[in-house]
Amino acid sequence: MRDVWTTGHVRAAEERVLARTAPGALMRRAAYGVAARTAALLAERTGGVAGRRVVLLVGAGNNGGDALWAGAFLRKRSVGVTAVLLAPDRAHAEGLAALRRAGGRVGAPEDVDFADLVVDGIVGLSARGPLRPDAAAVVARVRAPVVSVDLPSGVDPDTGAVDGPAVTADVTVTFGAYKPVHFLAGARCGDVHLVDLGLELADPDFRVLDRADVARVWPVPGAEDDKYTQGVVGIAAGSETYPGAAVLAVGAAVQATSGLTRYAGAAAEEVRRRWPEVITTGSVGDAGRVQAWVAGPGLGTGKASRDVLRYVFESGVASCVDADGITLLATHPDLWDARDPDAPVVLTPHAREFARIAEPLGITLGADRVAAAVALAAKVDATVLLKGHATVVAAPDGRVLVNPARSHWLATAGSGDVLSGLIGALLAAGLDPLLAAGCAAWLHVRAGDLAARGAPTPASAIVSALPSAIRAVLHG
Image (tube, rainbow, N blue to C red):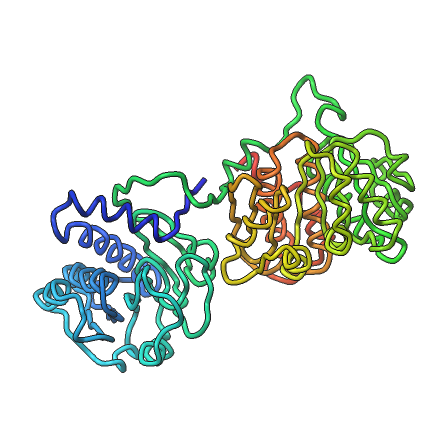
């Protein structure tokens, strides 16, 4: 599990370390890390280090200083280093002097055209907004691989938002702690490498799960387990118009655990044909006892669907509410009154669904997606999984997980139904709602990657890939 802190918390911790560290020592340690990763990327991309040409894009402040010191270290490995000073009168004096002593030179923007690699030291954690026109013009010329210092310049460090020209890095070398940008805008950051600075930090602002975290909590049957003890999940989804939503959600639940899945709804025949191990019925009232419900995918928004959601809320067990279920809550907020206060709820909106349910409550989904998800979770006392390239999962108590996707293959019809089925199965197995949603999102991405294999893939293929994804999680 990786811990992530906002820039305000990181800067405060850095100040405490700087107070007890010799002047310049922290910067040189950070710069050495940049130089090491730059040399590694040079060797990987060009087959060598000595004699290669590196151009530093140097802004004002400490990030520019890091880049200049990194250039000085690279000169010791016989790399040709040129610095393009984007704010010459505010360039870091000691770093510039070190580069010149090492044999580096100050050049012009056109030097970028001949670079084997570019180091982005334009702006640091304090900067907000897009690149200024002069910096944007230089970045637009870059064709070589890019190593960014701390974060890609022009990307907001706390939200990952990009409002104009910005750098896209192949590698980002960050210092002291991971920042939100590294996961909320992972595609801009490339491979992120952390240089330890010995910072002392309090509880993180959010966490990012890794394979070991998911493997540790994924339900695996023991010697004394049977289909009931592993969790029974009920799926209230699909309709005569949208039977596929039911088939996908049920399929994900079946593949996620080896417990028992019950289906209730108008798509019973289609579900039974595809998943004969599932117990099917036409109504939630006849479904039998479950430990968790999934309600909403393809369900419709009429009175009958409202009655289904009301029944699910009154049942006293955990529930995952998605798609049409979220629309029902937005248009009929009185449905919340039917909820058993002791039964956890997970909401899984995409951006438009989030707006439907959150805006009437005074919550707007702006650039800060984490803050918006946290606000909604607290307001409705439910775990909120906000879908996106970086999925944000917020619990009512303020805990947050972020799951960055590695590709865009999950942006396909029915993918969300698969995710809902996974969450429902994990809720039925007794996982904490935050972990159930976070682990489901993590596995969903891996299954999508396995199904796609570098090409577009349908949601049904994602369901089929779930056993392979789970096997990879559990056995490495």
